[in-house]
Image (cartoon, rainbow, N blue to C red):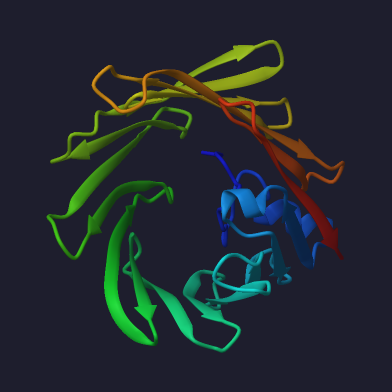
Length: 265
């Protein structure tokens, strides 16, 4: 589901800038720029190159100078696909070609994908995260098993309603509660709500099916370091061709962050 995009990196298809929309609009390059990057200690700009199928094939992410560097520095991501358009590998390198991380996708049979992420430091492997994702005949993800270096594997199960929409997520051997997605309509808008631990999420979609806002309300228990209720709201704006125009994120302390998007054809 759509959430905060400030500081995040998206390689694949999404509800905000879908591959179908990018391909139909003839987009070849996406340039994203966000405000408050120095304060948030996250990237300043991101340039993505789109192939003829609407898939992202490379991403350049640049960060502002900080207390450790006197100049702007960047990371370079390369995404490789197979003949069917499925992701095969993602490589992340710095300007000196040092490899930071590598993600490998293995397609096992018709309903299983093995997702392996190898994080590296000075070209030496130091951690590996492995996910096994299982799909039904409709292409819906029904199970994910996360294997971590230190600790037992975590399993999550995904259930869908009669319309093929995500209905709930259940976690095995975990303290996390089952997540149930509730749907309703208000005028021409469709609304999805879910309670995830101490946070309540509310997604609003317009008539064309675009997500126009995400609201997050978190209630902290008395035993936690933070107390009270905190709310944040993310709003999404679109161009006439369906591409994302900008995203604003207003937090509980009234701080506002904005991500702007421009495109080349």
